[in-house]
Length: 494
Image 1 (cartoon, rainbow, N blue to C red):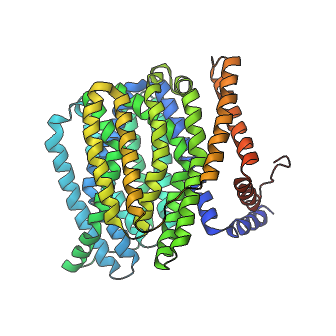
Image 2: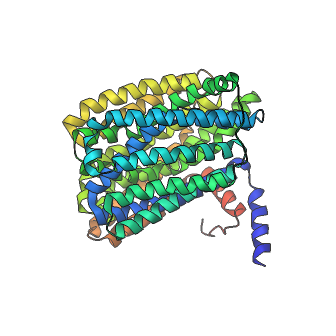
Image 3: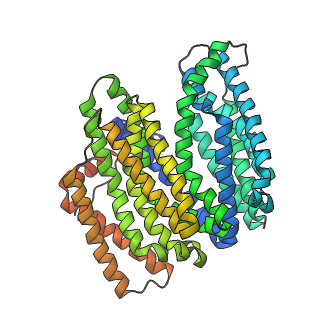
C-alpha cells in the first residue's frame, strides 16, 4: 500500500508544470541542506566560539581560491565535451591530466605563499589545506565525468553525501574535543567520500587523445574560469581581507551574520537552477517574450521571501544572533543589517546574470562581473581597515548593486527587463503589516529568551503570509494551485 501511494503521489507531482515542479524540488533540496548547515553552525558557535569558527571559515576561503586555480574551468569544460557524446574517453583522459597538472601548480603557489599565510600556519590547518586540494582533484575528476555522462542524480547525491559526511564527522570531532582540526578533517572527509561515491559509477576509461581535444577543452574553459573567479571574489574576498586586517573572531562573526541572511536567498537559488535550461531553450526557439515573463515572475517570487526576511532581520537580527549563536556573535548585528540588503540586490544580480548566460552572452556576463569584482576588492581594501566587518558589508552591498545595475543594462539590449510592480508593492505592504505586528509584540513581550524570539519569528511569518494572500489574489491563486497539485490540503479560511 505504501509503495502504491508513493507511486500515485509521484505521478501527481510529475503532472505539475515542469518549471514549478523543478523549482519546488530545488527549493526543498536547498532548504534541507541549508537547515543542516545552520544547525551545525549554531552548535559549533556555542561550543568553540568565533575564533576557531573564524579560522575554519578562512580555511574554506583559501581552499576555494586555490581549488579554483586547480580546476581552471576545465571541470565545466569536461562536462560540456563529455556530454556531447563524441570521443568521451579521450576528453576524460585529457581532462584528468590537465586537472592533475593544475593541482600541482595550485599547490605550488600555495607553498610559495605559505610565509604570507601566517594565520593559516599558526592555526595548524595549512597541512589540511594541502590535503584538501589533493583530495578534491580526485573528487572533481570523478564527479564532473559522471555528470558529463548524464548521471545527474548520482552527481547530486554525491554533493548530499559530501555535506552529510562533513557535518557528521565535524560534530563528532568537536564533541571529542578536536577543535579546528576536527572541522578541517571533516571537510576533507566529506570531499573524499563524495569522490569515492562518484567513482563507483564512473564508466569512462583512459585512452590516447589528440591536441585538438586539449584545445577544445581550453576554448570552453576560459569563460567558465573567468565567471567562476568573479563569483569567488564575491563569496570570499571579504572573508580573506577581514582575516588579513582583523582577527579570526571577526571572520567568524561576519560569516555567521552572512549565513543568517542567506535565508532570504532560498527562492533565488532555486529559480536560478531551474530557469537556466528553460531560458536557454526558449532563446534557441526565439521565444523571447516567454523569457521576459519568466524573469519578471522570478523577480516577484524571489522578493516574496527576501523582503520579509530583510524587514524581520532588521527587527530581530541582534536577538537572533545572540540566542542562536551566542553572545559574542551579537556584535555582528550592524553588519547583518547591511548584509540583509545585499540579499535583495542579489535577487536581481543572480537572475539577470543567469539570464545573460542562458541567452548565450557569457562575455557580457563576464564584463559585468569583472567591473564589480574590481570595485569589490578596492572597496574592501578601503573600508575594512576603517570600519571593520561593517565596512566589508558596505563594500559587498555597493558592488552587488553595481553588478545588478550593469547586468540590467546589458540584458536590456536583448529583452525587456521588468518587474511586476503591483505584485512587488503587495509584497512590501504585507511585509510592513508584519513589521508593525512584530514591533508591537516586541514591546509587549521583551525578547529575553529564545522562545520569545521564536514566537516573534513565527508570528511575523504567519501575519505576512495571511496578509499577502489577502492582498494579492494572483499570488494566492498560484500558490493554492501549486499546493493542491502537491497533494497538500489548502486551508479553508484562505
